[in-house]
Length: 135
Ligand SMILES: [Cu+2]
Image (cartoon, rainbow, N blue to C red; front, side):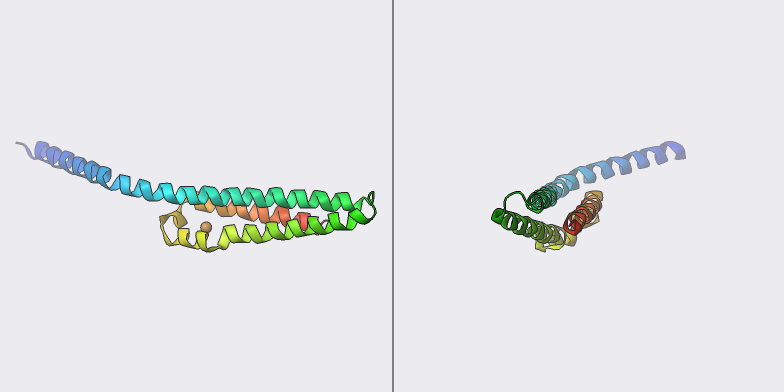
């Protein structure tokens, strides 16, 4: 066997070994990722809900500020403000609560999905702050 042929056989064996070990290692990691992805998905839902809740709260505030319903106006405004306050709390919880902290202990904390989630969260926070500043 020539040296080139021997080298070819050796690299093929190494590649095959790499593929096999990759195959064996993959399922466990995929399972871990699945659980982390599901948690991240639920945190996305919370981020989206915080935006919806804040928008609905801002709508109630605007409705009350139109002054069309006398005594009902103040309650409408108060409830709108409370919804925005809850939305902010929930958003903070989603972005830096226990569930998020635990995800950052694992590989999910370094993933592109996690970076995206925090980018999305920052946009949601900016949007809600704008709604809150509205008079
Ligand atoms: Cu995170």
